[in-house]
Length: 295
Ligand SMILES: NC(=O)c1ccc[n+]([C@@H]2O[C@H](COP(=O)([O-])OP(=O)(O)OC[C@H]3O[C@@H](n4cnc5c(N)ncnc54)[C@H](OP(=O)(O)O)[C@@H]3O)[C@@H](O)[C@H]2O)c1
Image (tube, rainbow, N blue to C red):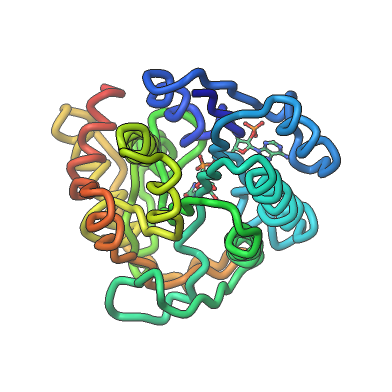
């Protein structure tokens, strides 16, 4: 099997290169090989490679910058994705894609379901939602894995930033009134590969995708605020004997950013568990494991 992996250098893309390698011949592209801001090259590349599956880990993920670059965010997160989905339909191959908790407005008290109303409150969320809708409208077989608060041991992310600031600063304030579920990029890649492995061992690969095609929530179990996430990182460093900054709580209103963020974006992952028997561990366990790799 040949899998075309788009966005190989991102947090999730990098981990996918590792986890998909045991399953298939992976043709992994970075921005140089396939620039999603140039719509005309996407279908010609896919049609010339004729992969058996497309996994798209590339995205415009700069949430604040997107407010000033809505056209570019839409091109990469929606129009480029629409082209991938059209190609997947034409070649009759599945498309695996990732989306975000930021499709929700944050106005909820219980974990969001896949069937709940979407109402993004920033440009990034709007562009990702448009990507989801384009895939669903294309008629291809697909998996959209909506995930949240992604971190990893490389790239730019909250875990690495807080680990650095804990060491550099004397005091630090982190928002305590936005609640979500941190998710390790490695686990996103592992779940993706395990689902593909299930499809390969199914009696009929075609039926597997027909039966399971759809949207699923995929995030770390449990919930916490950005402050809780930071506190966990700080406590880990303290246990290693490090002196760290004093951590204080702040509020969203006293920490204004160009993009508005949902206050509550915890997602219910039961649909994924029921369909594939897969559920991520408690987010704190995953953070501990990721941090231990950096020690
Ligand atoms: N990060 C989060 O907290 C978060 C939360 C929820 C959902 N998600 C979703 O999860 C998926 C993976 O996110 P991630 O955190 O792994 O993202 P990431 O680390 O920011 O990586 C995104 C990748 O997309 C590539 N890319 C950006 N613009 C491109 C273009 N014009 N052409 C080709 N490639 C381009 C980047 O290439 P370069 O390396 O060249 O920049 C990078 O490799 C995305 O769909 C994202 O929307 C992420």
